[in-house]
Length: 119
Length: 107
Image (cartoon, rainbow over all chains, first blue to last red; front, side):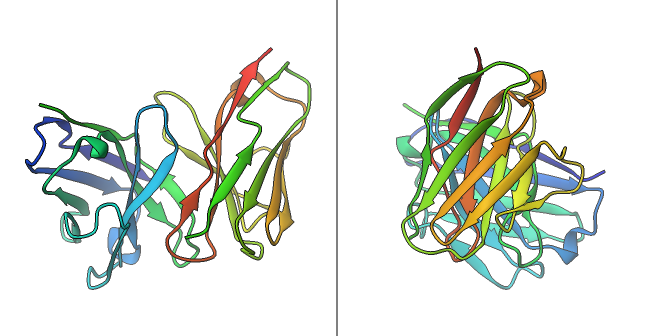
């Protein structure tokens, strides 16, 4: 059974950093691209970043480009999101999601982790 | 970026009824649209991809149609577990973009 379990969320002050993790199991992690998608309170879903299966290619949404870094450790089957220079508008639930190969849609999602940026 | 617009925003129905949710893209996305169900405390569930292909394990009462810019998710004979939020997402080009969501509520 595919499982994606996020961790590392919490309350952080504006301008500070936070690192999210996503532990994957139930599939060969190194065979799949991975992504982060977020959802601000009472808002819709917003794609944040994606990383290729080997980690060499990354893509970012305009709202986080230059501040967030997606990475992975295939030996640990873990996906990361380093979030720097956090802003109040980054407050959201962050989901780890698995794109189906090159299909561009997300066939598995984690349950999400909440990040609150506030002083 | 491709803008995705869903309608209606809210939808109230009773078990056994059929409902349709619409999704409109700001430009042609060919057939490349996905639908997801979101429920509190559960992982988002992929229902349909490529506009009309049912994801493995999803009941056949869910169906998708459309191409180009206009798409529809239809749920026939609603079951109690079908109530929740539904999102469309275009997977034709980067960045992937989502509709604003439709809340399907019990009447």
